[in-house]
Every structure is written in structure tokens, then in C-alpha cells.
Length: 162
Image (cartoon, rainbow, N blue to C red; front, top):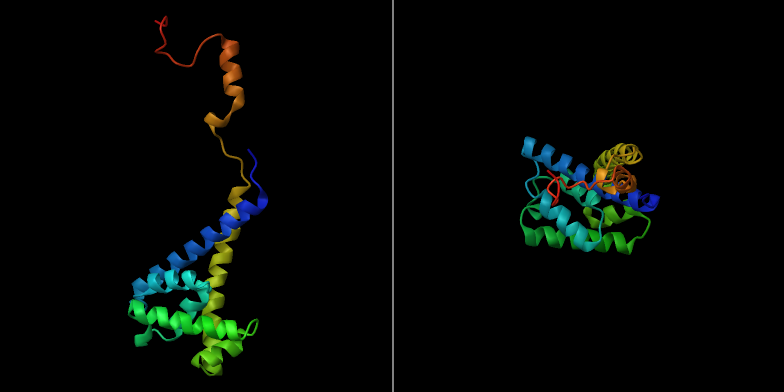
């Protein structure tokens, strides 16, 4: 059965984002830099905010106490979301309003670009493998036809079989 190309691409992008997040989590754990990534990702998804943006802001301010407890993470994500909503299609201005200068904005954009690039590369790899045909004996409609032509059932334990 051929899948709709859009569904495959959506699935691939979601998987790529997940793998990019895993990469970030692994890098954070290995360096001990960001212990609250899972909470940041979960809260940003709940708020409808890009996880890569939220992770980028947290990466720029890794030692900030706002990014350590779940309640403070929730508050920071909401503040970031309000800034993004207040300045639609003007992310740099939203980040300045959130509480940063030009260096903060540049650093956040760099981290966000890194997270997005990882997700894109993973999505391309997944899309390349999604086009490859796979073998599935159970989906092969010709299997039943071949069994009937052979004049026997596939079940060796059927009555009358010795």
C-alpha cells in the first residue's frame, strides 16, 4: 500500500525533531549543561512554541535559575511565547523584548539554527529511506494465490496433513 507523500513527510519531520531533541539531550547530559531539557521540550510543545527556540534560549542561559524547576520553566516558556505572539514574524524583536540584547539574540538564533539543522538532516535521511521498498510477506496478496495454485494450505498442522 502506497502512503500519501504528505503523511510520510510529516511523520519524517516529527521523527527528525524527536531525534534532534534526543541529540540535544545526549549532548546536555554528556556535558552536564542542561538538566531540564525534557521539561523545556514538553512545556514548549504544550504552549505551541518551537522546542528548538525554547532549548536555544535555555542553552544561552544554562545556569539561569529560571530553567531549573518545572514551575519556573513553565513561566519562562509562557513569557517567551507571549513575546513571540506580541511580535509575529519578528523573532529578533520578540527575543529582545523577552529580555535580551543583540548578543543574546544572535546566540539564541545560532543555537536554534543548530537544533533545526540537526532535525532537517535527520528528516532527509528518513525521507531517503522511506522511498525504499520493503518486503512484507503478510501484505503480499500473491502469497494466497500461490498457495491456492499449489493446492494446499499453508498450515502444516491442518487435519489430513501427515
